[in-house]
Image (tube, rainbow over the protein chains, first blue to last red):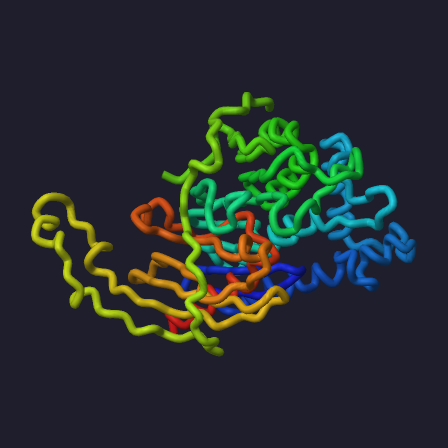
Length: 240
Length: 152
């Protein structure tokens, strides 16, 4: 089964190789992501996130999901010395960087619960794969028509933060300025929650983020710095 | 756990050349994905066939898989129309080519990705790409349409 839908501003592409998984499992996955968009988008005035930011929700009103996301945001803010921050000065609450990985990981868990054992889910370039081997190319940071490495993933997640396409969209929370120390940083981790947040946070930290991410439990790192040097961890699962 | 980090320092430019942009062929827009007839493998000359069977282990993918070319539907994005053409060898994608892509400089650089082979088919054959984002929308949709049309 192959499906593509456009949610949260990016294409979500799903491939399930199990023959006996019903289309409804994919329907439920896309419905979940739409629900997340409605509840957690800071760009939708009636989302929980927007209402919380306007002071319309008290702590007792928060859903368990939102509490979890805010807790993760705080965990990464502390771990990065403030480089990763969902509450930048002068800006509204924006947990997007955490919500994406967290919600897509949850979506993958829905598939597993529905009986899928071999699938590949790609949400705007962030990947959760199960039952591999899957060959996951990493986009070249400067040339969109090339890859800079190919990874082999059996069960796990891959996330890449980079400056291409959306330009300098990741801010270093410590300075409030765009992060410019790296061209691209990719993290392989057991879950996309970890991979995506670690990639985003490390990218925000700049060059020092490479070492920081590599030191995180379960994370493997591939990075291209501003001088176009490639740095990776020894355990990175590069495909043969 | 703290690990020593920098291990391999390569220049980015030296890495895997994957997919070479070919200028739009000026083809007209098609609304739906379509199959494009291709010559069957049997009809094309195969100079290496006499020696290959005796000299090494069998290579089923080289001879058995039929080649099939499928066009994705044209997808209109905010930056312009996108359409891809996919060549399958059996069930595997062996190449992807842009038939139409926006002229905007940023998207021209950002649109194509995924797949390609030339002689590196084995190592370049991939299932998905990490690091694609917004402007790849049309590309992925058109690619998906081609895949769907092929399976149908």
